[in-house]
Amino acid sequence: MKLENKVIIITGAGSGIGRATALKLAAEGAIVVSSDYNEATAKETAELIKQAGGQASAIRADVSSVEDVKNMIDKAVETHGTLDGIFNNAGVGDIRSFEDHTPEYFNHVISVDQFGVYLGIYYASKKMKELGVKGIIVNTASIFGYMAAKGSFAYQAAKAAVVMMTKSAALELADAGIRVTAVAPGFIDTPIIKDGDDFKNFLAEQHLSKKLIQPEQIADVVAFLFSEEASAINGQTIPVEDGFLIFKRS
Image (cartoon, rainbow, N blue to C red; front, side, top):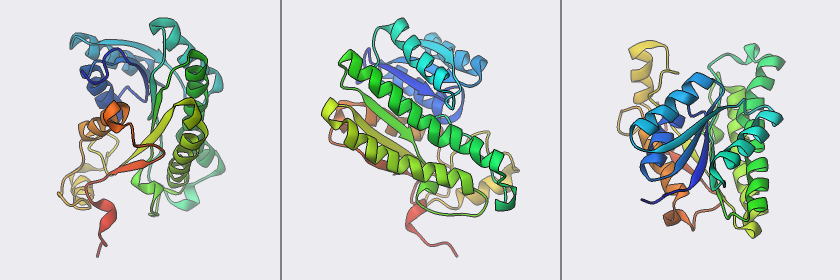
């Protein structure tokens, strides 16, 4: 298996892309640390991995909290002996007008989607250096890190930052042998899309296949980025968006 016995933390592992990636990495032999703001769903993901014959532990963490992120990383090493990778995936955000982007809401989104990724990069890389591990860091950006659309001002600001933080971190950490990449998903078929079949169909039409992307399709790319087969990919954000970014909409 490609990732056998690699200890990898996944934030936002309780659902969606995080859970799909946790299951995929475990199937590839990784020892998964399932982390989520919701402790119950983090444990559910870890249990699903164990039921499938994999290895996992769970820990609650708010990625916008310095103490939570430090504790998450320390606990992972305490439990499993090392840290080979982290998938900084946890995120928040919804569709709301710019007028409704209050300072409180903007700060909340930035705290999770941008600052939370920074904390994951910062403390995971410090621990990897301490352990002498040439680890791998993967971040979740978005197609909205490359383009603007009404209703997602804070989310777009955060995800654009993730794209650049991925580049900068790769440059800063290269001498330590730590590789940093990211994925930029298109519209994903998850429960976060709450507005019914008409809205889901509209979003599906934005992709060349006319289908929403499945979380497992993102998980496949993340698993590749954690593997040695991707060893020449560094500092790049990989769009996984089924052509969303390449055509002009009428």
